[in-house]
Amino acid sequence: MRDFLPEDVRRREYVIGIIKRVYERYGFEPLETPAAENLETLMGKYGEEGNQLIFKILKRGEHEASGQADLALRYDLTVPLARVIAHHQATLPRLFRRYQIQPVWRADRPARGRFREFYQCDVDALGSTSPVVDAEVCAAVSDALTGLGFADFTIRINHRQLLTSVLKHAGIPDELHGTALVAVDKLDKIGREGVASEMAARGIEAASTTRLLEAFKALSEPGGIRSVPLDGAGNRAVDNIEAILDLLNATDAGRRMRIDPSLARGLSYYTGAIFEINVPDLAGSLGGGGRYDNLVGMFLGQNVPACGFSLGLERILVVMGERNMFPPSLATSPADVMVAVFEPAGMPHALRLAQSLRASGLRVMVYPDADKIGKQIKYADTQRIPFVAILGDSEIASGTVTVKNLTTQTQTTYDQAAAGAAILEGLTHRG
Image (cartoon, rainbow, N blue to C red; front, side, top):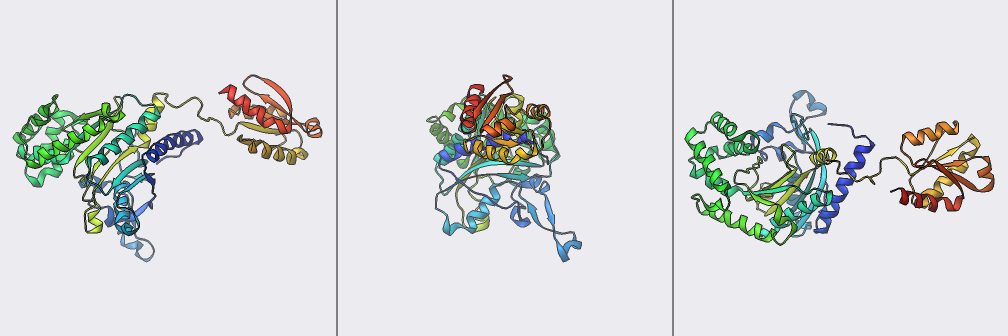
C-alpha cells in the first residue's frame, strides 16, 4: 500500500482516462461498489489460494474482543458486481454492460508490479451467452492498451471446459481438478518441472501429470487444438473458442489472439472462455478475465450469463514507466503560471489577476509571500512552472502584468486582460 505523489497521480489519471473513454465507446456504463463486503460474500469465490489472501475486518464495538471477522476488503470487482446484479436485478436492464475502476486489496507478497492495494479496470457484460460478448470485452481491452501506446501485447485464450476435458483424459480425479488447475496456471512462470513438482505435492500421480503436460504440448502446436481426444464438453469448448476468434478477426484485436491450452486462471468462478493479456518483458499479466455464468446465481438463485475482463492499472503503469511511454505533454507541474508580487499590499491584485487567468483556461497558483522576486522565480523554476506573472507597483498602477517565460528567459509586459491569451499561446508553442 503506497503513497502517490503528484506526478504518480497525474500518470494514473492519464491511464484511467484513456481506459474509461475506450470502455464508454463500447457502450459500458460506470459502476462503483463499497470497499468492504460481507465476509461470506467473498469467501469461497476465489479458490483455496484466494481465500488466504482476503483482508478480513474484525468485528467492532462490543464484539471486538471475539477476534472474529464479519467484513472483508474486496478482493476483486467481479464478485461485488455479481452481488449488485442480484440485489438490483429489478432495476437493471437484462443486458447490462458496466465498467468499474476502483482499488482492491490482497494480502499478497509485494513484488515488481504486485501490491497489496491496487486498482483494477474492469469491463463486464451480463445477460447473454453469445460469443459476441466474449469478443467485445477482448476488443475493448485491446483498444485500451493500443490507446495507451502498447504494440506488442498478446491476448491468450483458453476454455475451462477444454481444461476439464483434458484433465479427465489425463486421468486426474474430478475432486483434484481444482487443485490441479492452480498448479497448471503457473506453467508459464515455473515451467514443466515446476508444475510436475507442484502436482506431486498436491497428490496427483506422476503418470497423470505426464499425460497432462504432453496433452498441453500437443494442443499448443499450430492447429493442435483438436489433436487430443476430448469429450463432448471439450469439443463444444473448442467450437466456442473458434467462434470467438472468428468474431475477433473482424476487429483490431484479432491479430493479438493466441490459443494457450495451459492457461487456467486461478479464480474458481470461471465457467467458459478465459483470457489473459501479456507483454514480453513482464513476469505475469497485464490483466485477465473470462466467462462466469454461475457466479451471479450464487447470490440470486438463478444463473445470469456473464463475461468480463480486468486490466491491472499498477502493472500497466510499471511497464509504461520503464518504457518511457508517457507523453512529454503530460503535465509535470502544478500550474501553467505563477503570480508573484513585491509587497503584501499587492495580494488582492494578485488574486484578481489569478482569477482572470483561470477564466482563460490556465492553471494558476499565487505565491503566498512577498519574498524577493528572485526567490519567487527560483521556486517557480524548481516546480517546473513555465511562466511567472509579475505584479510590481508600476504594473498594478497601469493595469498591466509582466510575464516572464522561464524556458526562454524572456519577459514581456501585457495589459492584464490580454495576458491570459498570450500565456496560452506561449504554452502552445512550448508544447
